Length: 632
Image (cartoon, rainbow, N blue to C red; front, side):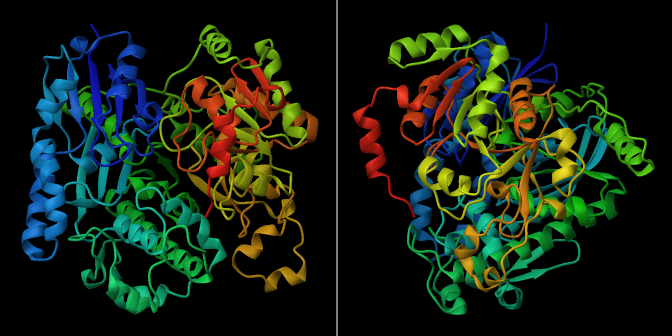
């Protein structure tokens, strides 16, 4: 009988569940996709139900259940922090204690109550060990340095480890309250964005600004050491004891108050974003360089919320000492569910990792052949343990047909072999296409399973998709998806970026001259100046957050790009997540149709069913929703 392990993360943000069977990841999903509550922190009841259903088992057939951190140790940190800072934090303490005393301290009972019939052991990992396990064990490396960076777990805020075979050891930790993740979140809060969800907005805003606050930050707020550890001056931060991240003292230092959410963005926020992004990249580079010196290994694995900073990741790949890096696609707390399940299999049970063709082996061969001018096509097979991160639900043609009939939607069924050409033709006509096909992605990135697609060549596509489709801030860049064999022809990258977690520049020969008067523009004004032959995915600093796509990982998604390439000569398309601002990525056909009708998307693809927006019946609830939606 196979050994089945359920991993769970919950009660902070982005709760999730993951099922591992004999070391193979069978299913993983975030609770938000089912509850439709963005960043849902509740116990992942629906995600657990999905994982069990995907495996065809009940809870009684589980052998182990793992929780991604140790609640008692985290509670100890909270008590010590509150007591050391008293009487500060009294209000925060009174708000936190009922939840801890009522739920979080009794996690074993809570898990047992949610898993009727389960009688096996419930085990607890440590937060950063779960992150590290999620990074190393699914990676294609036999051995690697492992770096985790986030806000805070129990006490650790960052860690450095070494993975060899099925062994994984944490050798260095940075401890609360000093935290790169909390530093970035503090500036996210100060810039008027929501903590634990708006950090990527700060990263996207940074290229519009200048690093005018770097010296001030280093002089007053943070000391960065050569090993990448840091010390933060707690006089300027309130997260350890308050209900906010920063207070009046930081406002006095900056010379103006924190931006109110939804208010006008100014050059100050852009400069603050650029400054904290540069500080963050410096820390990431120093921490990973230290991990290289300590481990002596040539490959690196990353996880933790800060590992979603794809600009920093790109610099580590280009400028750091490691030959290759691999980043867990669900790098945040959701990935902790996967990490603890894998850790139980390999560390607790001592099971070896399954042998697989190593990315390290073939990518080094790829680079060597490139240098020698002897590289052949097709490229060698890609191998990691994440199955492209397509670990969520899939819906059959019969299930979709029933949803179409029940909803009264107008749809045309085409042969599966014709879908790619239909979508490519729509994209080439500058239509925006919602694509729901195959299994839903695990992690914050849409990777072709639940994506909105557009023509990267279109100068108007970024504005159209931001304002009319996504209902979000106009400054936000879109990401390109590109056929893997063509990535080096369009971007300063010749390697894998399957999970959209690396940023690289558009190649010089794909750029277009920028008018002289554009140099005088400031801030968001820069957005309207096309900078390359694929302007919809080219940020104002010529960068792009790249997803490389292989056919063996997602055949239909790849075939769409290939068909678009045949029509246009361009193997690059726009890919953004299938959702609107403030909502989770869609999961079901009903979710997809609702989002489709509440936006100005032109076409919806549900597997091999094609829905044209103009053919759909107008629903009053969709029109009223759009009228009530307010942008920044």
